[in-house]
Structure formats: C-alpha cells, structure tokens
Amino acid sequence: MDGLKIVRSSEKYAVSYCETFDEVAKEGKFLSISGGYPVEDIIRFIRSCRECGYPQFLLIEPGGRAVGWCDIVRRCDEPDDVGFLGVGIAREYRGIGWGSRLMTATIHDAKKRGFNEIRLEVRASNFNAIRTYTRLGFVRIAYRTDGVVTDGVAEDVWLMSLDSREIRTDGFDRREFFGRFPKTGFRFKPER
Ligand SMILES: CC(C)(COP(=O)(O)OP(=O)(O)OC[C@H]1O[C@@H](n2cnc3c(N)ncnc32)[C@H](O)[C@@H]1OP(=O)(O)O)[C@@H](O)C(=O)NCCC(=O)NCCS
Image (cartoon, rainbow, N blue to C red):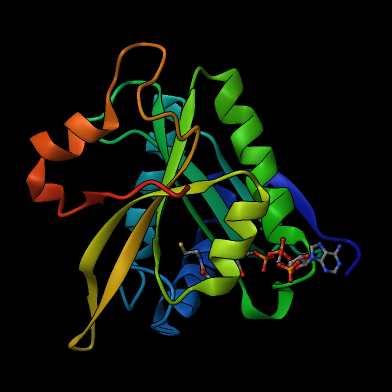
C-alpha cells in the first residue's frame, strides 16, 4: 500500500496512536494487556520517550492517522544498553512489510543511541510475530510458563534477543542473570 510513511513519534499523533493501540490490544491475542490506555497516558509516554532518548516511530496513513507503533525503552534491573521493543500494526496493514520496516527504523535509531542489545517478549502462540522477529535476527533466549493471562486464560511467553550471546563482551552473563532474578519467571532456554 502506497502513501504510508514512518515518522518519529510526536504528540500530534497521540489520539490515533491511542486508538490503534486500543484496537490491537482488544484483539486479545497479541499484547500483554487486553485494552488500551487513556490518551493522556499515551501523551506522557511519547514525551518520556523523547526526554529519555528512547526511539519511538509511528506508521502514518496519508490522512495522518497513526496505524502502527514501535518503541524501544529501558527497564530497571537491566544493563543500560539493553532496550525492550514494543510493536503493533493495525490489522489492515499487516503482512506487507510495514512491521519489518518500522522495526528496522527503530532498531537502527536505537543502535545510534547506544543500545547494543534489543529484547522483546512475545506470546508463544504469536507465530507471525516470532517469524518476523526471527527474520530480523532475533533469537529466543528464555521462556516463561503462563507468562501472560488474558480473560482468565494463561499462555507461555518467549523472551527474544537481538544479540543473543550467553556472555556479552561486557561480562553480563544471561544464565547467571535469570538465576539471580527468579521473579522475572523466565528460565534460560537458548535457541540452538
Ligand atoms: C507482528 C507484526 C508487528 C509484524 O508486522 P507485519 O507488518 O505484519 O510484518 P511484515 O509484513 O513485515 O512481515 C510479515 C510477513 O509479510 C511478508 N512481507 C514482508 N514484506 C512484504 C512485502 N513488501 N510485500 C508482501 N509481503 C511482505 C513477510 O515475508 C512476512 O511473511 P513470511 O514470514 O511468511 O515471510 C504485526 O503483524 C502485528 O502488529 N501483529 C499484531 C500485534 C503483535 O503481534 N505485536 C507484537 C507483540 S510481541
């Protein structure tokens, strides 16, 4: 589909970003929550990504509606150069390459900002997403049984990483990390 563009996120897209997030969340099969956030929270998130230097890009229709998002943020307890990726595309634009392009742009920006490793969590049943991530170079490194519960139904979750070295060049040892933080629920299970 022509005419779509990938842009750095800004508050002017907050309403449609909020609606698209809500629609994808309500599909109930993909995200860790089954509904969106109020638009004020989305505006706060856009601002905090900008202020913290976290990459955040949106997929925009010719009319200016945000129909996809991708962001990479830091989480506490993780090394500073590890970023967590979140992504979603409106149903009508899936499967034609936009998700890959959006993630590639966001990951490229993250590398320029000093992120050496990108991680994400994905439901074990989300085969399309896992295939797309794998094509981009992500590998599965850890597994959490019943990692997400939607409408009372529990499902397993994979942790995937773009840079899957067991021991990174800075000495960070994943096996030791998952042993030390059992509360994450993840068990080290590298893809071989
Ligand atoms: C997961 C997700 C972000 C992937 O984005 P996407 O735009 O659907 O993915 P892409 O189109 O880039 O790639 C998927 C397929 O389209 C194909 N494709 C890529 N470029 C293409 C193009 N230019 N023309 C036609 N097909 C294309 C790919 O080959 C791939 O198919 P394959 O795996 O059979 O080879 C998207 O499907 C989505 O938002 N899903 C729902 C929410 C979700 O799961 N979020 C992630 C939670 S962890």
